[in-house]
Length: 420
Image (tube, rainbow, N blue to C red):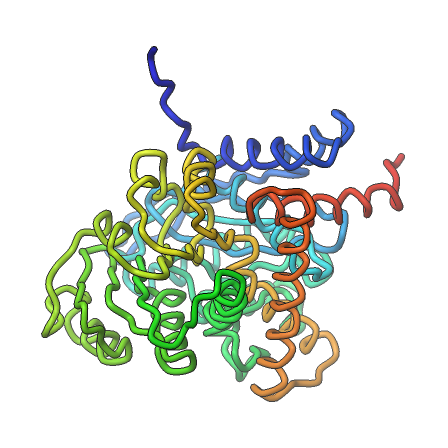
């Protein structure tokens, strides 16, 4: 019998996940089709003057997936592999992420095809401002609120906020989240995704009877999400970080190490590879190490039917968006490994983005303690909603999370109706 190769197209995966949950919820086929398609897609091709004086044309996207519950929300990524299907999938996942977290947003996502590692700060600024101008026709505090994602940060958001504000003629702090504090950012935003992951991992640990104190952790992807997650698990939960990686490779030590020291080493050398007292491992091998918790915090599609049988962790905490294929999900579930799905595990980022937006609209700002406490409450409630659905319907955590999220969006459609 010829084995059919599993799909790694992120949007195909996203749609299959909707199909799986939709069948469990007995959704009407017409409504299911609505949920499987974006509401609006914008593709832009725009010129940017480079440092050498030459003009280069970049391609960017903004996909607005669903706004049944509230304004569109989602990050913007700069990456050489950005594609329309990837942005569609990410906007789809944002829809369910906001719904499962119980916050009043729909889902969107944006991206520009570029290699930010090979661009100067001036080139990045000019590209960002031109891209912001191109998508300004569909974004705004009451319509669609972008945020940082892969290879974008608070500086990127500041440029977008300034560009939109200049076009409007007055300051528009609510047009993006993830901004620097001085122009309306929120305390706790830089570590929000990771802190939310830590809370979700803690709740999962209780369910599988795994004490996080001394539990071994491997983190694939030592960027903003992975490095903060490793630090919080080490400092606040007493876990042992034994492996981390970046785009150049990974490091492993059975004795464990302080992730803050690894981050300092990476900032000095450009990579975690070569950190004293560790041996080198590949990004692929890191996922299969004998650890309690595996945290994929890089890109999508890295846990597949090929490597899922060799994953040894008790918990997989998805810091990245879409790191696990449906086939891998089935294998991990059958093997008794608890996967905390991305739309739940990394929902802390969009939750604190929501907090930032609320603070911008009210022009009243909260303390870090306020932000952390509110985030913890939302993460614990969301985890429990998903767990209760898992137990009631006898499904895996991803299907449970999708069922919670889709049911919420469907309820919004039922109240709103289809107009005109």
